[in-house]
Length: 114
Length: 115
Image (cartoon, rainbow over all chains, first blue to last red; front, top):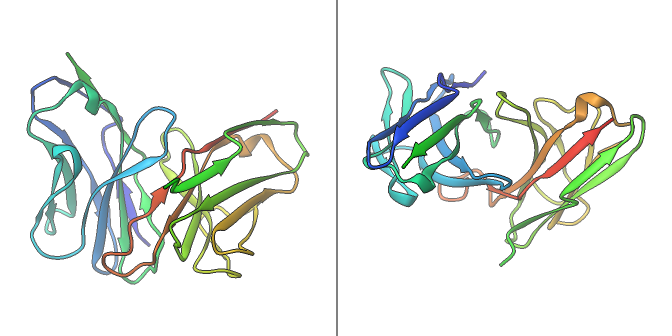
């Protein structure tokens, strides 16, 4: 069975400071990892994904994520946060042996203060 | 390009009533999914479809039925609504599962309250 953990319910950061949202995962096969963002009253929007290749993945809106196989982590990062980055962030995993089913973490709310 | 469209956006039901949520996508995607979102629990897969005429159970299928009569539409039905089904429902679609085709695109959601 596959699972995802986002250990922080909320992350507070000042505008201009680095932002990190943590994610750890568990799969039996090779992981496909995704980050999605949800703005209020909207659906989820795709940010980035890791399938294979470079451990550092760059995505939309200046976000990046680092895949760490030994720590089974896929933390989302942004060097300089904006107020407009305030949203709910979801990490998701798909085991390459599990077909098309994504398992989502519980979500982390990011609040960027001016 | 509308992407994934869900109707209705909001609905209030009484316990025991039935309703159907409609999802439509205009991206010619093969795969479609229904999720429910509850606070602190992320999104949980209810049912999904890998093509027209096919459906399969996800993580939390009980109390729901689905149909995929047309490729572009995926319907989620509640035959006898219960308060435990109060949630926000999201539909998503993707081309498939292969590399480059496995990104899921989401609708704006349907907020359902069952009293």
